[in-house]
Image (tube, rainbow over all chains, first blue to last red):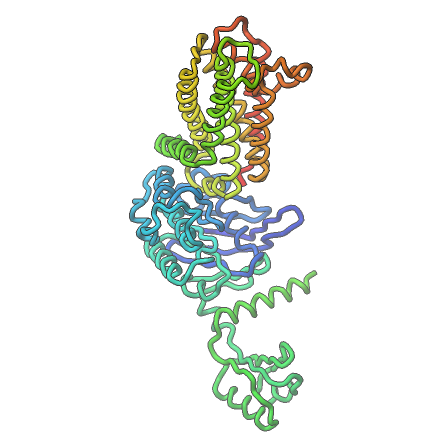
Length: 306
Length: 241
């Protein structure tokens, strides 16, 4: 049984469709990142899994349970980190973690958690006086107090400085090692690529791609270059043996894997015509490239369907 | 219900009330200042032998209003606004346990208020002679009524609006509830004022704490009606987000 199952989820608020059609699964010991731009439906999806929202249609299951109907059975087994935290502003981390520990049957040791989250120096500083990153790490620590089997982390690295990010990444990695299923959201692709076993790209309200970060990146192989606008793409395409498209004025995409031969033919063709080459990207792309391409396709399809 | 969670939550609710200056201002400083000032300076005529005999019961009622309505309402409103209540919804702490902790904390703070205000009033010459049981019963009904009003505001309005309204109601109730001057001085308006839970509370507390003649039936009925209606309405409308 997967730890998280989302099947054809749709959530609308009145006439606003926050999530149109999202399906994915996540297993114990797996870190899955929901990525997408703001407003893509990431938080709504996570809050439906946490039991805050009811699906308009479709089903969600966490540890085989319905998050709304089986709320009471589930709350002791999930850990939740909300955007914005939700900690008592007047309480320092130690006090807040001790209070949360009283809610659970078998809580983690508060002192250990404070150390794990790197909050030792500010253990008694009221949350309202913590930095953004410290507040995020407090929210993360509070999500872990009850030894969750599934952890939902909404934007865990937003506003966290580089040192704090290392702490968050280490905690996520240790959760995976303990067999916890971690579902996190982020719009920072580099972060997703670093921490996640799998990413699910959502935009707008639907899954446009999912897989291991490396798969998504290699699936997006092509050659992109910049040159003066309006070059003869058909002639170039014939020469390269692959279609060439001007995706924006002066920006071109060759739909073929980036072999040295293709790159050599491209530069030769430009040299023969004395055309300058402003930019050339070939081979492995960043996840960001894949993401931008996939979400652009999603928008194009969405626009076409209307 | 987890007793461990209830104990820890109640202790934190009490601590959060007693450690913050703005909360102490409304729960202790204002009632005590009012008691001392009005009992010592002949601003209004009270018709009692000792001025403190008139003011002490009213200020004890004011203490209940400040804790059950103002402090509870404003703090719960901000907890809702900050997402604290939402976050607690994803823990095993049940909303019934949270509610019980908040009510127990209100009662605990009220006990401290009664001890402190009672001691100060005694220092000013107050010698209550009536029924502590009747007064306690009135205090419990009033706590239900004012906590209901506090939750009603906190669960439906934005935190800033709850803050303004709770403080505004506090001032209005302080003014027209027979706390600072006898209700009779309001003339025809007194009949309307007597429908407020605050006036009903003072109406009931005055005879209960001075062995006064007669049972103020209308006061008890008004207080009981608020004690049922306000919590029911709050429960029906409360939103955690």
